[in-house]
Length: 199
Image (tube, rainbow, N blue to C red; front, top):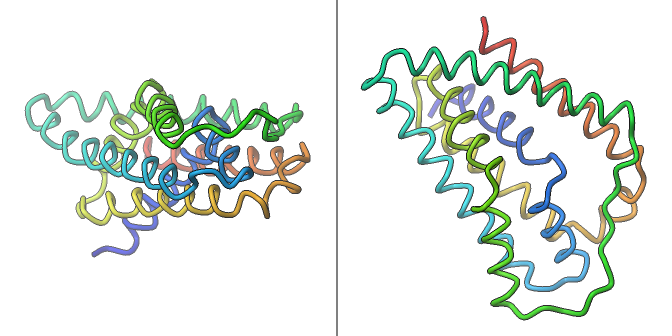
């Protein structure tokens, strides 16, 4: 396995997944409340793994069938990352983001898993991140397995850290400055990947 490829995918996957969104907010809430954390984390990690695998495997097939598709996705991916970086930079400058759990009653496991699946699979953003963007960037690497494993590992580690580390992170991420620094880091990584795609 090529470690360079693995860590390139790991960095990309981590940058894509750490952005504040409905799915991450739900995992954080469940972690803070210590409700069904294991099943929720597993559901998120397995869903991401399936989508990343499909993106990495399917992208090669599409580029063989339609040679122009790879180039289009390369430029499209660079444009998408540039916008993503700009939005993260804007959030870092503006600030004001904070995540806190609400005070609603505990929910049953079945309902928690259903909510998790909807927040994951009904979110169009997840398809852009995993199928399109991860697939597009994977085209520049020969070791597809290492790339897929890098992305999957980043996803799994993030969800485990978010779900089980929520109680430790909660005091930190209640402060807007923490999210501003996180958004600034995301902007830098996304911008660097966009430049790498173009060159």
